[in-house]
Amino acid sequence: MKVQAPRLAWTEFVQDLSTLLRDREIHTPLYIVGGAVRDAYLRGAITDVDIVVAGDAVGLARRVADWLDADIYVMDRERGVARVLCSWQGKRVCVDFARLRGATLEQDLRDRDFTMNAMAADLLKNIDILIDPLGGAADLQHKILRRCSAQAIKNDPIRALRAVRLSTQFQLKIHPGTAADIRAEAGALKQCSGERIRDEFFKLLGLDQAARGLRVLLHLGLLQQVLPKSVRFSKGEMNEDLAGAAWRASLAGVERMVAILKAISSRRTDNTAAAFDLGMLVIQLDRFRVPLQRHIEREYGGARSHAELLVLAALLHDREEVDVSALRLSAKEEHGLNQIAVNARLFTARKSWSVLDRHRFWYTLKESGIDVILLALAEYLAAQGNELKQHEWLAQVETATQLLNAYFHRYDEVVDPPLLFNGNEIQKQLHLKPGPLVGELLGALREAQVTGEVRSTSDARHFLRRQLR
Image (cartoon, rainbow, N blue to C red; front, side, top):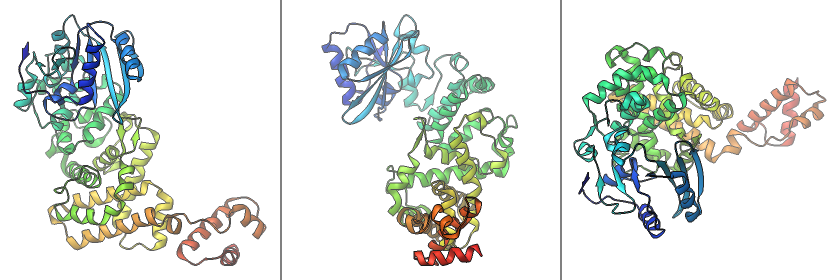
């Protein structure tokens, strides 16, 4: 059952945890399983650790939490699942403890989703020895994603989505038998909660090769299940040719949005901006990179990033055909999708922007204006394809730069200047009663301050009287 493999690249936290448990003379068999083992095998980053326990997992989790001075959450007492959240070297680490499925470790591993996630290491003995009864390491070497059993997808249809996400993330080919099971069980995806579908789908949208994953979703009949009420994706076994121009435009928009977000992010490399289009964007937008990063890294519910929502917006560029109600998005997310899709077209269509245009753009859209700009740039690049005209692209980038400069560097001048008179003062000066007229005068005063027509309280007083007349 145990095979010698290259040394697993464990983080210091895992090594320290193993030492702690041995020093405390824990004798209950403990195994690290799942993604942490896979990532240690691939020399990847390990963010979460899953541990299976041949005994009382919740009780052990409580003790470990005490030893680490960490927080603990019992997630499923009946099934024996608990989560320990601790701080290690300034980072938040999540350790999940679960009771062993079945009588043996091998039975537990065979009950999992894919062979790449069905590897283990003994936490109390030699954690460098890989336990791999289903050949997950060989599948990874051969770039294959294979389900653990013939019932794996049927037992939990959400694994169909996960298969596409993992195959995209690790550049694996889905084994023919696994692909056949996914096709057969695609309709069963509706048995899963909308929240689970949404979260797995958003993980795929967060990948560098999201467009590739979306192609596979459509090919396997899954995208139609994720967005069941959408005209574009509801034609049964629809392939890319049948989907036509709208589908190809969506994928091109996704590719360009992902590229723009990567150019903004901390993951950018020297190669990211090697091409002319992204190179010009990086040069002009780098002055706003820090606040842009904060904006796109915001999270919804702790599971979905704003960047992923922007990729979804690029996928749904023709918003009228798409219904996202099945994704169980928050009201804020749904409102944002609608707002940025409509206004992105207006951004591209406008050829010149006065200071008043910039004010009205930001005052209306607030922070969503950032999303409108990013989506408009992505859609422009997608529409131009290989026929990009450099001077037109530079004009688009210059417009984006001017708008972002107004928002990040001249907010009090252009976006929302402090008013020289408030509503109560206007009522008193002009002997008005509260009502819509006061609001209209406030708006007119704000715009007059932005354009420079009003610069002082005296200017403001004369301006308001003229407006009232």
